[in-house]
Length: 108
Image (cartoon, rainbow, N blue to C red; front, side, top):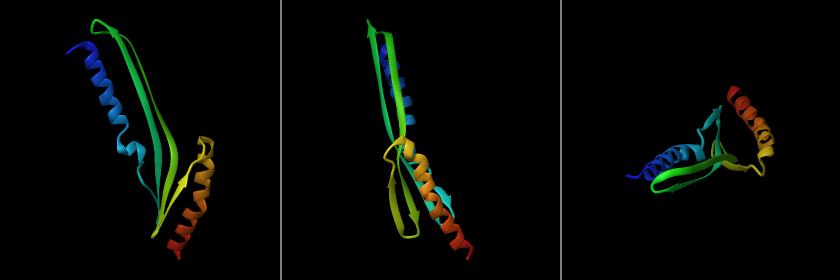
């Protein structure tokens, strides 16, 4: 197999590992009776160039951006989208009252 083919297969395998479903749908975070699941957008790309089966240049990139949270509280399931990257802090802050409420209900 040519060197460029081997490199391309290696890069694709590494990108496949990074972009698994666990990257897009994050690990659930449990806070009392409330479960918060982060959802992200994964974008990637790469390119190879060569001459006579030898790699002359290669490059690539990967981007993971949070886009929403799935909030589960009992039978209530809500999707809280994130409009911009800067809004992530405000979205997390919006969840705080729900999480505190869940803890208070649990204590009662």
